[in-house]
Each structure stands twice: as structure tokens, then as C-alpha cells.
Image (cartoon, rainbow, N blue to C red):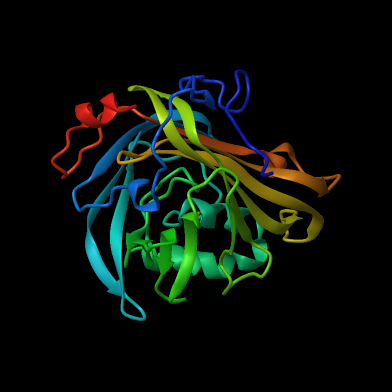
Length: 304
């Protein structure tokens, strides 16, 4: 079973704005389908209250995800552009601007990969987004586009002509698991693990409680991480991971998420607290999703 991170009072995200709990629902719901988890018509959008904690302490703001269109990626695969916009960006960061959240963590913990990620930052120049697990897939801008098939919803990366991210893979059933190697062109020990915790969960958000949610737990293995001193000399090693979850409501999309990036073990007696610190982020739906379908949010919400 994948370890589950949930925000706690007094933890990294001490703001406590989410007040979110996940429990099994007592209301019977229909078996959800994969394509219902994230309605992906062009024009659909979602708005969230977000908190994140990085090098500059806890920050709160808002973020939006929205589908804007489609394009063709190698080898002739149609993907969609899922753009992200966050209201606040960090004032203090050790990674270059222009990287995705996962790339920033890998830049931080895997110094040997910094030249490649620095080049990606220069080339792509992505807008800041704080979360890894609930992430934009911005098409040619990020070289990753949103793709949905009969078996997978996730991100398709143009340079690899292959999957670079899975939100869900396989049957939408409690206990279903999946595993995907990430950044295979740069490292051989970075993996995404997923497990469906439940398909009939109750989730509290800023706009109310949803029953019948599909909650997916994730654990990203960041591989062996290294620490250096100011001169670049190796001073220690460790193991890092990102754990968390995303809650999807069928026919509405992702309504909440939480994640924690941390060093779970290390051998670095001289590392500073800054080098060993954790990073956390939360998101909670704060407004009615904008949908291009005929069914209104109020009608959909009434079903949950």
C-alpha cells in the first residue's frame, strides 16, 4: 500500500485552510469510468485555493487549470493543452525559473542533472505552478500534452514519443495500482507509483462536500539524491520521495490534492536544515468548474 500524505494541523502547511478529510461514503454510486475523471473539452476550467511551503515559508494563493485546444505530437498522437496559472510565485527559489514542479525538485536533489534542467528552463520558460501531482500539461510549451486513452489519462512527452506522466492507469477500481518510469532520458531510478485508494470517497472542499470521489494515492521515488557544499564537493547522500493524492469527482474533474516532498533518509552529518527541508502543497476547489457541456455545475453537484 502506498504511503498517504495528508495535511495536518501544525504540520508544514500550518495554515489549515483545507480542512479536508477523506472517508468512505455510505451512498452507493455507479462504477466510475476513466474518461469521466477529468472532463477534457476545450474551455473546461477549474479554480483552486492553494497553499504551498518552500524556501520562503508558507504561501497562499489561487490557481487555475484549463483546456485550451489540441495539437499533434510525435508519432502522430493528438494531445490537449492543459494550461496552469498560479496567482503567486516564490520570492526565494534555488532552482531556475521556467521548470515544472517535478523538474524543480529533481534539479534541487539531483545536481548531476542540473545542466539538462537548466537548458529545459531556458528553452521552455514555463510559468510557475506549485504542485507535482496536480499539474499542467501545456503542450509544445512544456513538451508534454494531456492525453486520454481507453487505459490511461496522463501526459505524453514529445521528445520521448511516450508517456511521461500518468494520473490514472488501468481499471478504475479500489486497490488498482500502476507504475511508470519518469525522465528515462535522464535517470534510471525515478519512478511514479499510483494506487486507487477508493472509488466512493467523501471529500471536503471550499465549495462543499463531494461523495463518490475517486482518490488516487501517489508515491514518486526520486532516487538517490546528493548533497554538496558551497564549492560543489560531495558531503552526503540520501533518498527522496514525493507522496500525496488527488481526488477526482466523476464528470467534474479533480477537486482536491495534497503532496509532500521530503528526504526520507540521509547520510549527511554536515547538511544544513535548508538542504534537508521538506516542501508541501495543497489544492482545494474554490469555485464552480466552468464546463462546455450542457449539464450545469449545480446539476452535477446535486448528484454528489
